[in-house]
Length: 249
Image: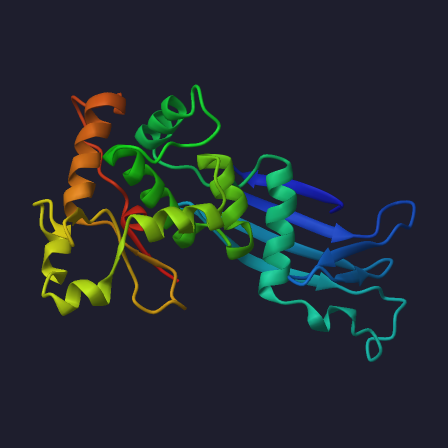
């Protein structure tokens, strides 16, 4: 565990990893599950900032023990941006800090949908839109190693399960291109591919995650959220944020 988490602002934290008062050593976990041990009297201090729902490693400082030989002290050589960020996110989330949230209207709809269920239903246009937009949001804003965990917190389904839903309810961009239908993605009129409504357009390259929600579904979803779950409807018309409409990873 880190020595401490200091909250500087609501969206700004300093996470310190290092030896504690009784001399116990701490470790930072790598993506492959290995541990990088922090020697006694050495410290890693990271500054984490969340801006527009994106978690960022703003700064990191490594303090070595004055008792160690600087030419032999190589324990921090394997530390990477991702390793430090992942460890910070893991401990911040354990304290319920730095967890990105959807807009108020989406969170209200989500709470309503999960009122009597542990998992969002795939039935209906609005539930499909909720799943697709939340998945795009995760790809754009959540560190890769935590996307599945965050999606399960929100939707009750992990990334693998959502992939199955997307494959069943989407078409490839290349298939639409072959039939000159790509322009329909950005039109308000509902359109079909092989006699089925297009709910999501995924990238043709299997190595690329993400895709696009068609405009007709975005428009329908936004109208629904404004009517049912927007508490400021008379003053402000809610619209989906760009990172919830599409993603490329």
